Structures are given as C-alpha cells and as structure tokens.
Image (cartoon, rainbow, N blue to C red; front, side, top):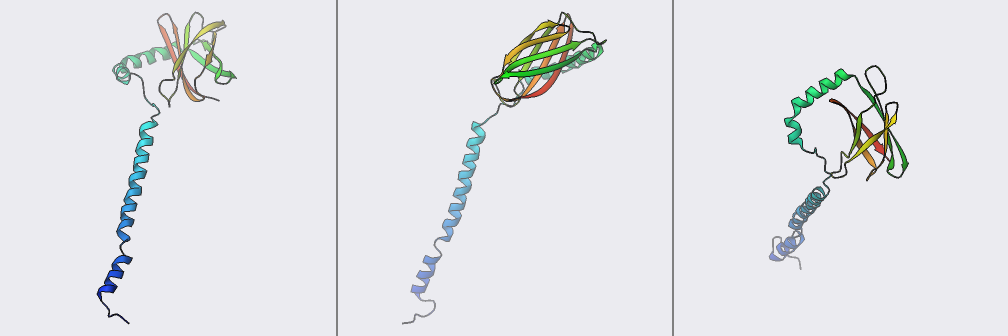
Length: 170
C-alpha cells in the first residue's frame, strides 16, 4: 500500500513535522524579551547614587574655586590624614597640619567630610578637635564598609585649605 509521491497524506505528515519551527522563533523572542525585562528591572532598582551634590551651584562657582585654589597654593600649608579603625566601621581620624615653614598650624577649624562615592545619602561630617602641635583628631562611625572619599577642610581666619584622600574601611 504504497502511496504516490505528493499525495495529500504525505503533505499532511510533512506539515505536521515542520509545524514546530515557527514556535522556535516565538520562544527565542520570548527569551530575549524576558532577559531584557530582567535587565531593565535590575537597572532601575539598583541605582547606586553616583552623583555630585549641587552640581549646578558648583559649576557656577568654578572661577571662585580656581581663585581659592590659587590662594591655597600660596599659603603652602601641608596636611596628612590618618584613619584608624577601632571597631567595626568605627575609628578615629587624625590630621597633622603644618604651615609653609613646616611649623604646626594652631587655632584652625578642621573638618573632615566623609563622602561615599557609590551610594547616595551616607555622607557625614566629622569636626576635629585640636590635640596640640598641629594635630587635630576625632572619633567617627561610618555607616558602610568600603570606599570613602575624605575631604579635609582647614580654615583659619580668612585662609582656607582643602585636601582630599580616598580610603577603604573594612
């Protein structure tokens, strides 16, 4: 009971054998859609907060900042920042400040700003107290481990000195 080539029964069997091929394309597009949806969700929910606070205002004051940097260079002040962890994410920050002749700098207001470069909302400020001989120190407690930018701000009368350092707290 051989069927003739091209019979309706053979055509029906051939159509059944190839009917799954369009579904491969549908499944492929479905996978691409699902992966893209996951990537959009992850991107939208894991914003790290990398941002500069008040960037517009900082841009407007660019020339003022250049002038302040020039004045700061003529002062010749030097500073070294040291941090020491005493407990989990807690420790002390100490700053040694000297004038252009290497003598300790007295009667200054010293502040260290801890800025988290990768997470928004965790920045904090630590005012330091004079400990003698140009040394200023204070205790701090950081909310997160990891990378921190320290901005040292030293003011005395009308003089301003700013220095930055990057540290890792573990």
